[in-house]
Image (cartoon, rainbow, N blue to C red; front, side, top):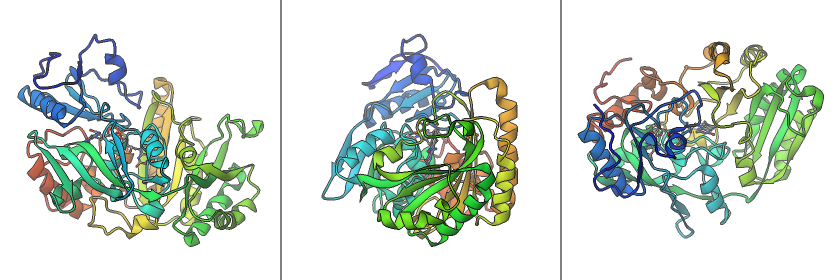
Length: 462
Ligand SMILES: Cc1cc2nc3c(=O)[nH]c(=O)nc-3n(C[C@H](O)[C@H](O)[C@H](O)COP(=O)(O)OP(=O)(O)OC[C@H]3O[C@@H](n4cnc5c(N)ncnc54)[C@H](O)[C@@H]3O)c2cc1C
């Protein structure tokens, strides 16, 4: 039962109900396929607001969604007829130069956080699209260009302030509620509402060496094999990914290629530019049709993909870790990608390794540190009428990659509810541990709108 009222006892922020002039904007999320109408949107400014909203929702048995950047593909940040706790008003950002950390309010986007830390020549691994939320991305892993040098965003979490299901405000850190601290690093929104993140910072930029090389489809196989081979010997500071896509109508793309399938190698290099240039030589020998690699500000690298990721499109994402990237996998990926149906769709082949791989499997809730690569089939199209066709393509691409990995992904990267597959995504051992933490901190599954770890799911076998 849900009872809509615009008053929440003890809540100092704004509460939006249907009819409020900002209601439709506030309920919209990145994935345009999600169109949900909450009874209440509680714009929380601090932990006290969160606790008041939680109490209100729990007393009325409302479904409770927690929303930050709104980029969950499954639309977990918004719920029909329920209560949305919107943390976007929490915008505080404070860099501690002595400790080399940043305290970040849960409502920040990566554009905002990167701007604040780059003012000091510092950064933490962040998302590859700058309008993504810091909160959901960090809690669900946080894969970014810096991960081979500094690990995932979650690996850099030092402390979190959390409002738990019973309304208590706790701090989680290595020596304070270590079980909760462990689970927050990858367990998503299952354990409470984080109001502030403290993240480790590293010297980065402000200028880095980055950009892209684009190859005609006829050279795609050679380019991908050369990229795989050079990544085997690349230092941690050399990162990026390969992308399969239809060439976008960008000013730097030759006119005859626009709309044609191409392979792009994205370069994100944080070491000596001369080393990066040396590594790129085998790719340059394959005559890229676009060569746009050079010095650029880190914040430009961080927003380089923004334009290709507009809000409000239909989305379906499939992802999976790959043990390696053998020639057969490259051939199968190219075969499946050849018929990419939408100009907004991109397949990413992501090299892992480096600092990402050096984190112990049990140090965080994020397993699969030994995978060599990951694939991401990011399908995006404007017209809902084209949904069946685009979804069929995404499923077929995932099926083509299935022989090359375990089928697991970090749950951030799938756009549908993973349901029973959440166990496989985490791995049985990590999942059991997450269930135990869930039983302690959210035994009634108040935080259920996420890739859910059910407190009653204590099985020991798959
Ligand atoms: C265009 C695009 C690019 C992306 N790029 C990357 C990338 O480079 N690397 C990467 O790792 N991922 C990437 N993702 C995936 C992204 O990290 C996840 O979708 C993430 O969950 C989004 O977080 P959010 O805060 O924007 O979303 P939201 O939808 O607001 O939240 C996502 C989840 O986190 C929970 N949550 C949000 N705020 C809080 C909080 N304060 N406390 C507790 N739980 C909370 C929500 O309840 C929900 O379950 C990308 C997604 C998109 C759409």
